[in-house]
Image (cartoon, rainbow, N blue to C red; front, side, top):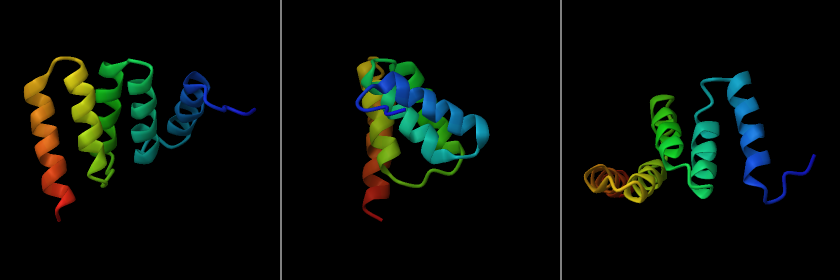
Length: 91
């Protein structure tokens, strides 16, 4: 099955990956981005948070979570994530 540019089908693939390996932090990060793309910002924040808890190390996770929080009107939370992104990006 070719998922092409269909985020819903891609979500199915990442859901399966997470079911197979619940510690796979990259899958949470990728699924978070897809949820952000389809305007599920709360789901995106949850997945980015899980990615961090599962050990995702790239600073980009904080920037993406900040963007999702900003879209939800959480400017304080977004600012904290953007600051964390800048802090980690510089190291």
